[in-house]
Length: 132
Image 1: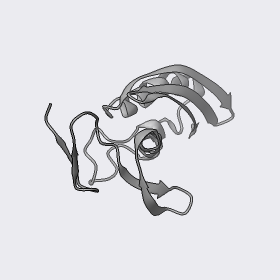
Image 2 (image 1 turned 90 degrees about the vertical axis):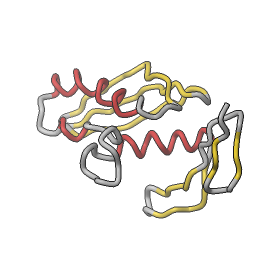
Image 3 (image 1 turned 120 degrees about the vertical axis):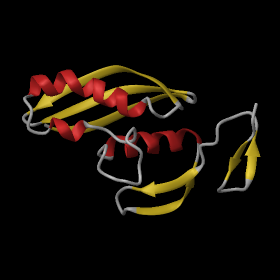
């Protein structure tokens, strides 16, 4: 196994993937220290889903989601595509193995979405919303 270098702490790890990253406070839009493990994966899920794919040059074209493209489509089309868009966005993170147990509730022009992300650190239940 090739050691991985953690640029935040300056150490190497041989037995596990490094997940330590900056901790984002999404409400105040500030960095508040560091986070790792399960919390880092939870933060990555939120950040991926909240980032519009192709909109920011800092990210490669596989980063982010296309959920915002569903705005203005009819609910039936959005419902058929939302699961695919979420899986496509999240499975680019190698810590996430699969997405399962999707449930969708529709209200006017909004969808409430729940699913489980099966990760290398266990199952993470996710709840999010999408404007349609």
